[in-house]
Image 1 (cartoon, one colour):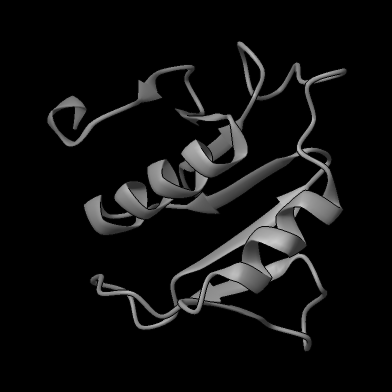
Image 2: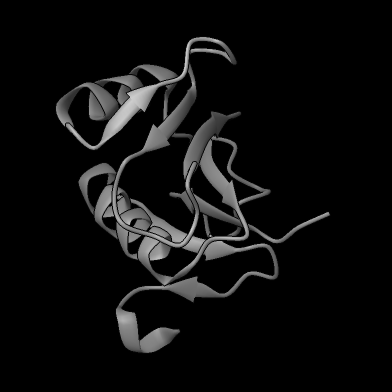
Length: 105
């Protein structure tokens, strides 16, 4: 079990109907970012991040209109904020808290 953090356009990540990030939007963003690589062994929506963080295999995945990862460190959350900005979205934890700028965490 772990703690998920999500990129969402909804007020709450679990209730995003009508506010979804499309799979095509996600894949286009991945294609435009040299730090992101699709991990085809898993599925097209599963992406590894090559940026600096404490985990050797940092990842993001798209699922049902949100993008998420598990147990992120501060560097991963910072990258999520960057990605969310490009998608017109926000970063939200499992319990509903939003991460908007580094001082928030």
